[in-house]
Length: 175
Image 1 (cartoon, rainbow, N blue to C red):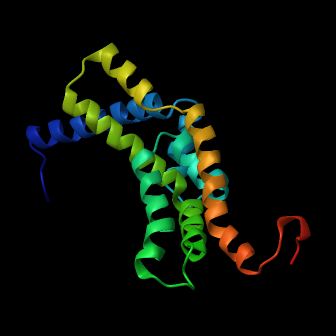
Image 2: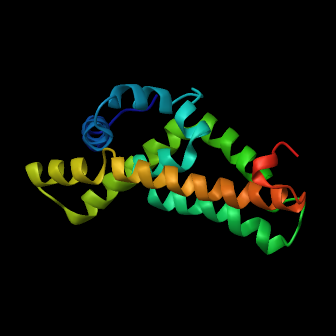
Image 3: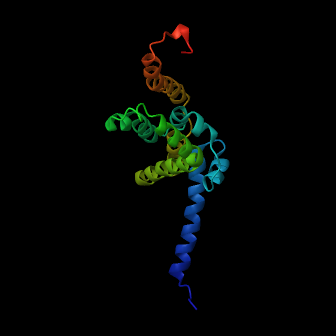
């Protein structure tokens, strides 16, 4: 039988306090509906916005590195392979849609935790920490609008070559 020392009890209490602080920090970063996001991040709840409009959703949620990675995989990866079957990235879009739909909540939670670690590294006290987390998290409507524009450009990039290859005029569609 194992007995706990006072150091073990202190470590356990510290872990509980850290989890409570982390939940509160997550609520500051995520903002509205934080309890729903935290709950869904633990399971496999389907995330419709992440699946259907990934670029606007990523930019709306201020997940800029993830958006850059998404765009790189969709556009640059097929070009690097120089494979006309993969170009312009439709298969990547479908795979990423499935991934983001299944793991969008978890991905957003990890993004929020990354912001919390930044706040920890800055060692911000009380109210300054809360302000930082609230400002670093939340949503960005300009980002969502930019995401819609980027998605329109990406769709043009993906489908215009196929339409133009059939030598049909846009006013005569369908070809």
